[in-house]
Image (cartoon, rainbow, N blue to C red; front, side, top):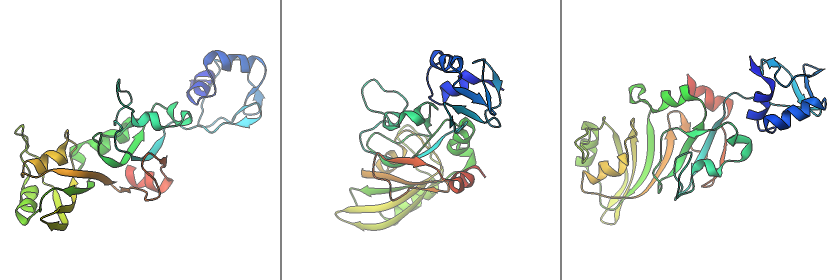
Length: 237
């Protein structure tokens, strides 16, 4: 059970003071009855709440898919740079969503934002072996030895040995390579550092899937949408 004013404030219907005023004016009803106390304890998932005749849509959690653009930081706050949360409309920001894992500032593509801590832990824990697939453009030709090294586990510059990863080469010549990389971890600059360990450089990086979720091709960079029920169900199974 939660306080009526807290529920409405969390959903962006005003401050506690503003909601108290609305209740005083008789503008808020719960299950068809005019609410007389802004501190009324309710079950928001079961009660029908209306403000000025408009029924509110209660959600405990929010789940968004974003096509993260270049130059934006995967964080909820940054002193110097724009963050992915800055791109979200107020109607979603009231849920205080956060990015699931991180994408580097110059990396684009699929990013999940939610306020569901349980789902966040499930998706980012290496123990759960959740695949993350990236499309990458490399400055040199990628060869079979690189594929074998990724399969065995790349050792990064700090001595950390990565979990086995899958490297698929789509194109490779003297002008560079186009590859797909599948990892189950999320170390700092991991994909870039994996290639650096092989004497190569990532010049473009885009995440195209996270677990069962694939990036919506209709989303332009910087755009986002809520996950469908089917997408969410597949992530939480």
